[in-house]
Image (tube, rainbow, N blue to C red):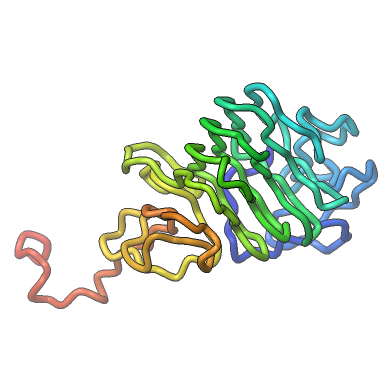
Length: 238
């Protein structure tokens, strides 16, 4: 089975045959579905198990009803998915939506309101997500993983986080809140897996109004070597 949480510092290379890279990929792609075939189950990451059938919805399609991805998509022409109706939910179930370095991963069609986009890994597009109409507003984008040339463009007024809530997020952290952004440069000062400064995240100003006030970050382990002896409780030292 493919892992559902990915390290952003691993290479994300599509449409290439590469040697094994730490257990993620590296198999020959016999069925040309852009995933390594199931030669060795321990290292294979072919989500459709070498079945050439592409899960629904497909790349370059418009979604007009609640939809759940059942496998990762590799969009060779660079176009991902478009949300084309109000008050619908796109749940990627932590599967990947992969681009070719251009175009857009997920578009919100002009005038769409009340939609939710969650649990998506949007990678290697020119724009990860785009809402380019003032009439596109009150949509909720949460618990997604963004790693793209430009992660977001939004000239409407949309929501990019919820209140901090207990629950495993898309990068394995302990809270649901906002989204993971590969280029967020803030710090997690209290080790809760949520950024605490340089807020809101605005994709270099391309989220015109607001942004992600609770961006997800990887939780760093606290090392006792970084804590002075005076700060360690006596009960720990004895």
